[in-house]
Image 1 (spheres, rainbow, N blue to C red):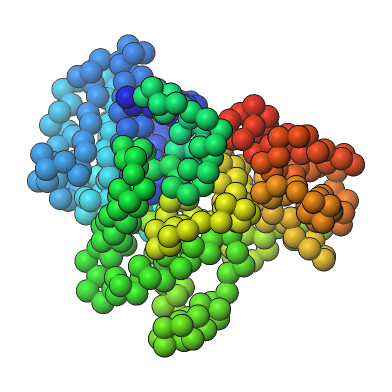
Image 2 (image 1 turned 90 degrees about the vertical axis):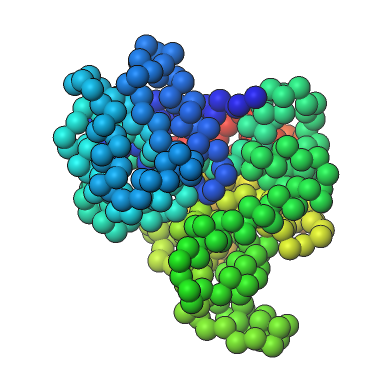
Length: 406
């Protein structure tokens, strides 16, 4: 059964009737198409006539004749027979050459509410941004969160237990991976998905693109997500372990392609004392946990970077702006900001000894800012102290406890 993804629907609903193009982006197979269908179903439930809804899936062979902006324009206009509002859904719109011209024309000349999806962030750059400045609103869709994983399993009569957090840490939340139960099948699916993303959203028609090198380098970056990023470290790794020379420009080019295909997200530093974002990205987080271990056979569940990655994705899906905090002598894992308010967050696996407790709670000592401060871990016992709140990670992911901002 299909999961109704309320996290995103609550964000998009206020825009159903607004004269802005709703751009739903996200990594391939994260559930954008199902979300579009859910929105369509909601409109019908709310009284919109089905004959005033036009749904075009550009990965369906039935629409392979739509190749250009002119083709798309003609197709939609041919299906409009009156002056009432029509609701247009175009799935994977990037397959149409210069699609942005069609969207600009349709929006300007007809009574429409337009929803489009795409698997590459180029949707909101270049000519589209120029033609439609101020006329689009973007919503990025992630694979299932842990809460959505729980909902999906229960919807399909599969038993849930809190121990499934370890399954989620390892295999992530791509919806179709839950159709498989053996680890080798899940891994094969993720490998196939990753290769499709490279071929369809990254390489495309570029003849000079080295798929083998990109896959190797990108999986190395994913496996080290959350750690301090260093181009020199990657260059040295390849020189020492693979006897291969890679240029800085190649690495930066591949990272840019990874970002545009939503494989990774950069996280900027925030100067806590100066209250401003700093230039440069020192860390990247993987969009889905399963992508982190495609080329490995084991996982260390106590590796805090995996949990950091989950918290980063969760905060991003909930529409927080997320930074890593920089003080004069240390760092804080995350600063979550929304509507000009913020809080500080440290993430660790378990507060298992005094040294860990002192390190995690002590990270806030240099911060005079009175905004709320949290330590998140898998400990079930509340270990809050000195005005710093402790939150169990499962309680946060399952909406049993939430953060507050000031």
